[in-house]
Image (cartoon, rainbow, N blue to C red):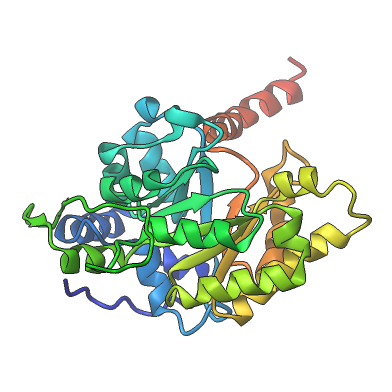
Length: 327
């Protein structure tokens, strides 16, 4: 299927339409693009338009811990208005409640939020199932050797007909914009070229074994241009690498993103606020990650936190006024 090439974004603001909050005309364009081509990934299109990883502006995402049956369109619209570009649905730690379905993926994509489905470490065919339902990427955690990576990559691509290589994914028809069925191997592979495979770097093997890390990143790069993302999980990395002294772990996480960018592989990480009650305190972490080469960045907050911080911001002037009045 033919897709219009997006213009090159020169800033993070360009990536979300040029203004914040995102306006009605931008949402109309996003909805139109989705209806015309439900298999399109807004995130992948922007990645493809970038001259290189390092020349691309960064994208903002967030992990969603809201159960699939409680995800509301009003919340999705607010996330999009605030400038988020992708949502990672946590089907690992949130288990079945974090595994979205066709309606939820559609709702996110209509608003220009590219849905990424994170799954548990043992998942295989579930990766392909999520893509068939409308996820435009999946995430695999806890890789510790090269086989973990190659097995995962086999799960996210349809096999070539008659190929003798092992694979972990079967065919399932999808729908085009006119609701016609995409049901041939060639058409299915073309549609799935819009998807990305997100590999978590959160073990000592992937973070600290330089030789293995290089082989993993080379394999990811060979999977195809803009088809993979190396995503650092700082919390799990800290838990599995507790014996690492000083700043070595932080430097290793920066090093992964730099090495990935050098090989043409996209990367990112979660950036925690140094003061949890002050989201602005994450500024230095975002700046450091961008400087290291990271482009897919998430705050250390979860989607369920956003309602509280919005309510707190609205309530704050009232309590200041009351305190100033001595009441």
